[in-house]
Length: 132
Image (cartoon, rainbow, N blue to C red; front, side):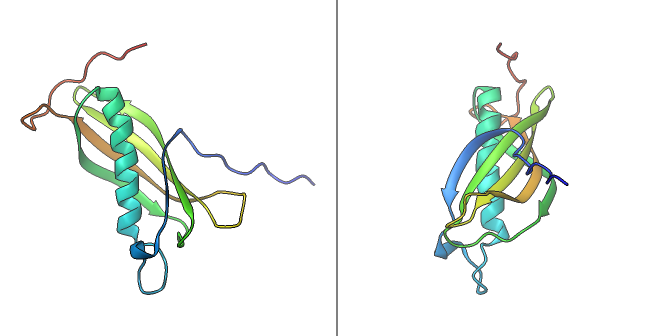
């Protein structure tokens, strides 16, 4: 019997950072809010690229925490634009951790974030045509 191939991240690696002691709860696990923040940053980068300008987070439609992240883990956030509207961009974001001393990354969190293109005054505006 052969083993199933390990799951691979969906999307493009957008950010990578190391979990640090300042980001932990009293049990030594990384705060969920820190993880959401890192995912929001990655999603905003993907949305900013598509909007070719300023964006703001307007919703987190789904969020699932699968496994804890620990100090020293390298967190990679992978983004995949799943929907583009008139002014909004929906981004699927997966967070994968590479535990210290290991070579196999694991999916720890996933979510769907919605961003809107905004102008200099903070008002939403239509997205530019997609570039090829």
